[in-house]
Length: 331
Ligand code: DP6
Image 1 (cartoon, helix red, strand yellow):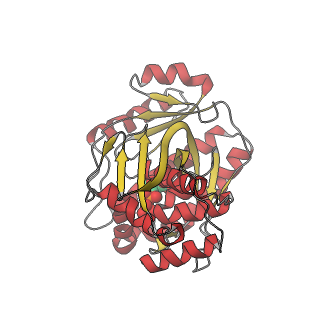
Image 2: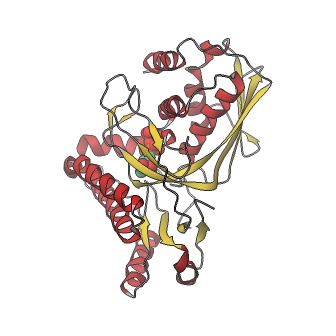
């Protein structure tokens, strides 16, 4: 698997020279999928079964700085992490693929997240995107967004989308070599669009997305219907974004997320990311919607809820969900 990734990285860089500065820095925003990526067609290159579509989270994301060190060191939010921490293992495994192209150097990585790590708020997405962009900045590669997206994808699929801001589509692609599986930004801007984060739990989830999706693909009978639904949802979402049809966007995103959770629950052993408080809030969303408030939700592989609504309902949403953290993706 490592060899396959190393070869992929080498091909993407295609002889581009590295000219190391003292350090490289970058910020990448986290993203939330409105049409989810769930399931891989090839594990080693992180190639998805279905295309997905997301919206980036503006100021919420990851800032990363990388430089040469005397040994590999990873700092997360100001604290040095032990080398056997899963976060460090994953970061260094990813960087291993770049090491031969950077003079077999040791890395010192400083990462600052302003979103809770691994609480279903996609910090791996912004984390690997920021890391790839910081590498690109450090080594002076000047890679385009398409290449950066493919490199970030190797770290975490959803990171392929965090290279860009706004609405972003990650094309699944069909090539076994992964050369057509990258994200692209959509031109549409929707200033009134709002996202509300309802934090249910910041606890580390017991089964990560990676293991969760592999288990779903392997054991869930319901997963068979997922690729076709995702394809249809993505097309509907694109049109809804084009025409600023919020009702269709909200319905489609919520249906897509809950359908993904249905495939997870039908896996064995079952994957139930929703907590009692998640269910309570889902019911609250349904209740306020029945009362006429246009608010929809989406949920990743975790217990937290993201509300989708428009600026004109912001005050009412804040009153109905007092703990909501409101984000303006185009602010
Ligand atoms: C439910 O990108 O974390 O958030 O590629 O294995 O690292 P890996 O998975 P990851 O999965 C994200 C799954 C999701 C849906 C989405 O963001 O599209």
